[in-house]
Every structure is written in C-alpha cells, then in structure tokens.
Length: 157
Image (cartoon, rainbow, N blue to C red; front, side, top):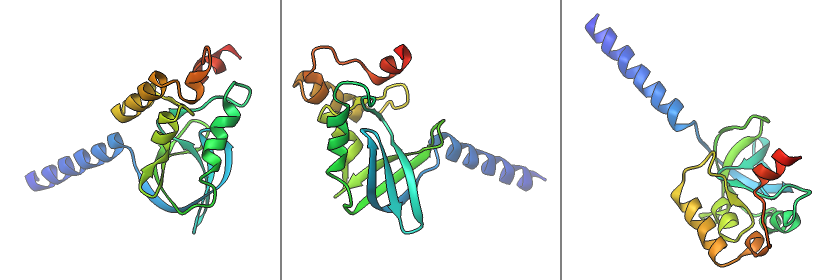
C-alpha cells in the first residue's frame, strides 16, 4: 500500500507540473497566411493550425499601425519555421511562438515596435525588455503620438 501510495503521489505531482507548465509541442512547417499582426495560419505536414502569437498583442485591424504590424509578419510567409505551441486561447486558436532561423519572431515583433508585450498573459522578462527598447527608440507603433494598447482599444469598441 505504501508503494502504491507513493506511486500515485509522484504521478499526481508529475501531472500537476505538466499542467502548470503548460503543454507544449514543437511543429515544423511554414506560415501560409497572415491574418493580422499577431495571428497567422501555419502549415505542418499533418495539416494547418491558426496560431495566436504568445506574449504579444498587435494593433487591431481598425487601429493605427495594424497594416504595418501585419506586413512585419508577411516577410516570414513560406519560410521554413518551427512553432512551439503552449495551449489554446478562448477563441480556439493555438498559442505559439514562431521561430525562423532560431529567432523568436514574437519577440522580434515586440522589439521592432510591431506589437505590445501582452503582460496580462506573459511575464517573460525578454518581452518586457523588447517593448522597453522599442518604446525608448520610438520604433514602429511607438513613433505614433498616442499608441493605444489593443486591449484598451477592444474595450472601448
């Protein structure tokens, strides 16, 4: 009974750790369509996924700098890529980080001022530093007079 109890305890801890760390999976493939500055379709050998970029939030379609943000992502169309997924958002989109040539494209989007660090869902210090860099250097959307974060924009609509 003691051995059985220990096994169940260890199994429970392992399952809890997996749950809390978020299930992640790696895919290889390519971006086949850009939907907006933080959402794209990704083609794998098993099919396609709609991806919401983890850690970032890009301007909404009716918001200033939306087109430029989507254009940033367009440069990665049909390039060999790796995608690390980490769950699903409330709209059923797969959350993921896009890597091309081992570069975190989500992070690059924020560093270039094409998106905000989505602090509500990501505590990643690198994303926070990337946003601070873009803001300090007035890159991308930070060159606008009064950039409104998308979460505030959505709330006011």
